[in-house]
Length: 431
Image (cartoon, rainbow, N blue to C red):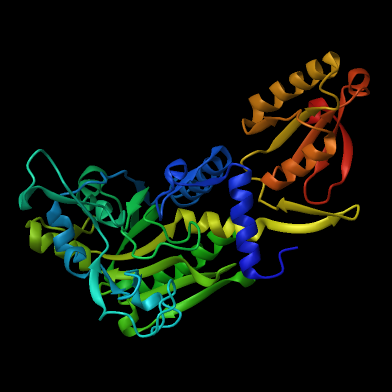
């Protein structure tokens, strides 16, 4: 059994690699810190989370509009938003081992975590976390751009396009999912803090007089989302971010924290950004960001409420909540108690014996039926039936379907429940 939080984290990381969820990026060449590759099961779990988010916050709502903005943007975007000047972390360097660390994340500000030297750190200096690049063949100041450190600015730059194209009623939101990049000084804790990640963000445009009411609505929606992910309510916490701890653009922020194996850390954020971003665009680009209330002459620049979700942190929370150890027939069993709607494999289909052609043919028939209906179905005939069950438990498959000799006569199969290990006979037509 995983006796403590560190052991549980190690067990999850081991399972993720062993079973094809998540691999170290560029591993065959020694890896690249802060990057991760998603295997067949990991990419499906990740997409299931993103699809669920899109359905909940976009498809099921009348007031939401989706966009997919470019990763590369005009450098003026990042200057106007403040990222060029303020998107920094405090960096210190050890004079002994030359290691570099985030000053605000050191367990002991006077001891190097690598070489254990005392009082060896330099003065902290600001380190901009954006990845700088050049667009086009000329390498000069005019060609500088950045890999976006957030998806939000692509939403703000398209605000006027959405208003002109659709003229939505206030309040309304613009949603985006996509890659973001941050040159983290100290990427750590598996996929929790990495240099390349995905975000799911919404900018919700409101009448400034209504921001408090709308903000509270979003607090409730966030809790509905964490429940949809299968996260235990007692492990989700609200942290009201005060004063100087808030981002410079925010007048109110709640960090929703989760009890990860690494400790209580931020899962997602909810911020009231006022009109900071739209006014920046209006002042720097010279484009009017006013919204005219339908049927009136009333104009104002909307204020913004931003719920910001990290895909990888959601996935890590899901894996942490799902990871379970118990005993079956006196033996340790590891299984992922994933919500069925998120599980990368819904059914695993097996012939009782893979060397019996009649069983294999019948099992293939059942597999084809389920595959056509559910898509996320796996064929598994490797090893004995007990080993198959353990393997499917570890990847979170809710149901194992076994075709035996009786199935040839009665068109029934044995279906096994992942969580209870209970088995029952059911007609193939009822699967």
